[in-house]
Image (cartoon, rainbow, N blue to C red; front, side, top):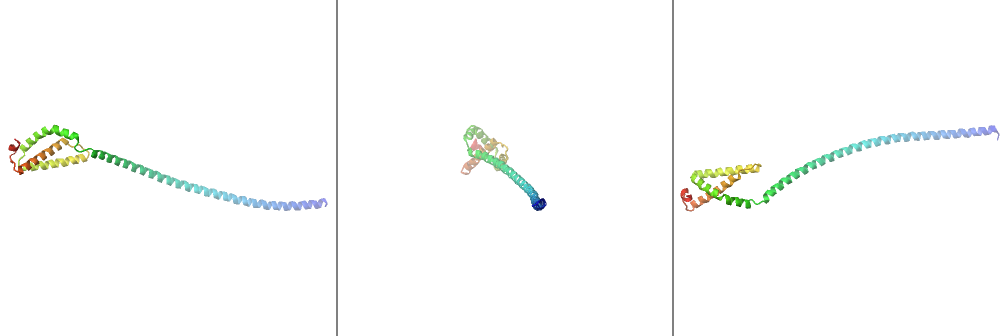
Length: 187
């Protein structure tokens, strides 16, 4: 083979190789371009998903925060209701007529006896009925005050109850054959 033939052979192979490389280069460029487009699309999808997830988690977080706040408020309401119930239970667990009441009653009996005698002398006939009704009204008002958180005059209420009881007992005795003259009964 002479030089011209060799040169021709090399040029031919070189041209074939160059075409093959050009073809390969074109395929690689197309593949690179397709992969670039795919990367851009994936980035967009990833950004959209990230945005969607962020919004979803923000909504869930806000919902959870509202739920926690509502539960915290409900807990505070329950604690207050429980405290009120405990206070009422403490009040109910104490005997209504404890030792203090009986000591006070024993000390005050002399005053009440004297007041009863004076009141019985003052009341005659229909005045007694009006006085008892007034006592009922006074107890009704005292109950309203006590339930409203105000302090009624318990001493006055107790004295009125004892007087009413004693006068009713006295009237029962009169009905059973006693005298209507209060001075004769009490004097």
